[in-house]
Length: 365
Image (cartoon, rainbow, N blue to C red; front, side):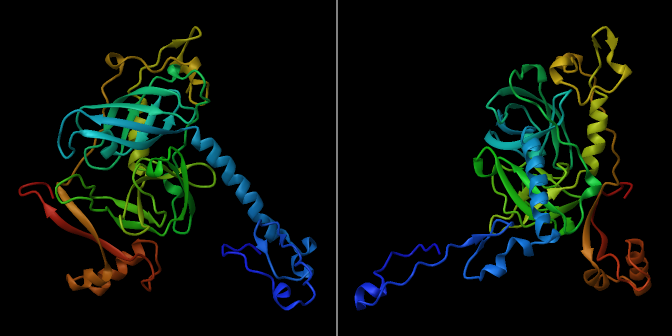
């Protein structure tokens, strides 16, 4: 058995007794854990059933998913040349990941791209660097898109991460792959615990997201991991890492429903050109070798990005039913809300409701 304490003289050396026979070496089970001080029958490989062998296949699936996703993850180096809106001038490192290899689209956080003038570059896992152009920054929610020219990559086997916003559910095992703590590539494990967490409050004067739920898990992500993909065992992104508590392990991920909608609209902003004597518009080129495509023209040739959105000019907050009752929620209304949120008529469904926090005087809210 391994020990980190200093070695001491054996008892037989002090008393003159006959030396003790050596201990049997520990055996290793199929799960890879050390099984010490157990009789041989307890670790007989013949006793390992199908349920015990299942984690091997699960581990192999995770390894394949992380290996593929890591080819799409980049370290983003940004420099804000001047203070603008809620962001001050300065340089930072963060994470992003490719969501459209053909067009060179990288998803990251709004607070990474910055709403003002920014100079940025992406570093892939093989240490190839490409310059980035800011493409879209959401005015409310914490996501944004950079773009790059895939033709500039000469050696990297580029991959993209598909988005699966509806795959997020409580109890789902996930991995966060990114530049956590400036380590270029870190892989953190977590289990989704909440899907209805209010948007985290980072600053009293700076940027804060609102009017959206966040996913929450205890992954312990730190600085540099902003913009990392939160993936499931199939290698699909179910969330976008956004922030965490400075004291504790709780981390917060942006759901991807709005991100997926914006991505589909951004794809329409990239004009298609002729390739190999045929019109690119005849078929969707995603999934093909990006070096064979010509879908990333200069800035002057991109169409204007149009992502329509509406607003009630109202800020909402999600409150639990216990607090809603103190605000005057009636029992029959609570029962109807619980049932509408997927629960039974006996009120075993949802846990809360949206409450108006702020409105704009004279606005539609």
